[in-house]
Length: 193
View (cartoon, one colour):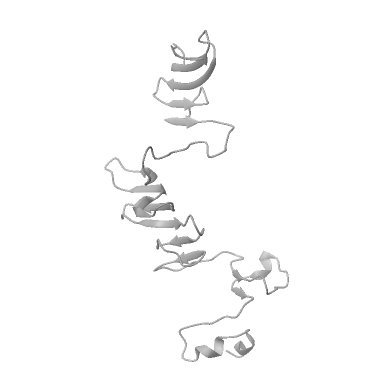
């Protein structure tokens, strides 16, 4: 098979087609008159438009060529080079971990490759979800948090029945009170608090 570049007078400047003898083979890549590139499509809708039915390993794959290291994609909303974000694998020295970071020069969100732990504001999450130097806000009409382990059973409830609050099916320990020990246990000592 050969790869042919065909200049056209229509909407596409150049069409790259795979064909054994003629230029009428299936189109593989198009560069439009506006400079947009289409791979798998003859009508690119943006500067780079990829179209495929295959999702094994990702429609777009980026690899390091010879040495292990960072593989990221950068985004910048300003022509001056400020306001940038980076996402990918290995950014900021976090080998094999997926990171999203901003112009501040650090990872804002990290997913550890080995554990699956998620860190926000930390590159060393200690649990499945670890937020450093910040708080978590849960809001809305049916906002609530449910903590449950596999050995405790909570009677079934609908999401709307939860209302606002926290439902805990394990022991709870609330810190920051002089009589904190009173709050530890199965919840029976919470009456009248």
